[in-house]
Length: 413
Image (cartoon, rainbow, N blue to C red; front, side, top):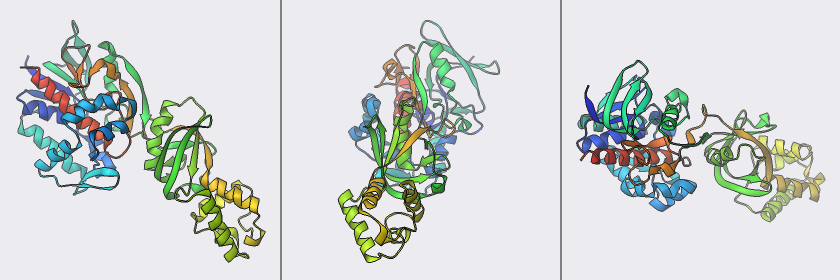
């Protein structure tokens, strides 16, 4: 039986960059993918436009990942966002930076990124096998001996890289396959959880479904203590709130899923309470005989205004000259400090990425080498490492995959 230098399980972003890098350094590489097509989740990135990294400094990038961000610093120094941009541009991909430092191909086509990765693998002789399902990894004396397939077949290598992803978007192939393998090898997991999904709210106001707001400020509250906050755009859905701002906050909610949490919304974060009160008074003084819903529609969308007025017990046909000071201050309060009870977040079928995964204490952050298995490396979403929207999670894949591939190939010497 042929013994490969490196076998990589999972042909997503991290697996493809790992395979290409290992082969570039001279390793004979076999890349296994259970789907018929490679890079399915990569093609979904950025709504198909492929927000493939975030152009931030290494330290700022790591800070955005939270407590585990420091663990990634070495890999980011080895193959950070500028390195990723340089890599794709050297292969003919023109790139652009959009708001919040998000980086896209100028073509706005994720397919171009995938084609580049496939060409990179082909250039250095990586053999890619699709529709291959791995059943288990057989080990002996803390060393993997072979990969066992569900059809009874097997492959052997000197070094192995697991890059199978997490549990999010299982229809794309990320269905948590690696977790049972890792446990059988002696590794421990931080409980996987959905990350980057919509926020469900209790007693959801269906009247607001489909309403988009360009700039709001959101806070996650627990026992009157702020857990996290974000500002930006949101959209009300059939069950809650989505959009980049809400999705980023969902990372914190999933960590506190059994706690009583509230979502506080400032619908007009650009204006202070006193200024808002003055603006409402000016509107009312100009049109005293008009209805509130018509007087104040310049502040927020009419649907939202009608909902908030009803919520505080005001008839939207109430005239300006009937609007009392206490009612006005009450309206200011709900516009600046409205609160929903949180009912959870979307499950793995909705979540963009997986939080939790392989305990980072069991992986060398400089090499992606398992501290328990002598010939195993880890990369991508199977690790307990996730970030906000905006190219962070693909950069995690590139950095960990590149380093894993480089380390596995170097270990052969």
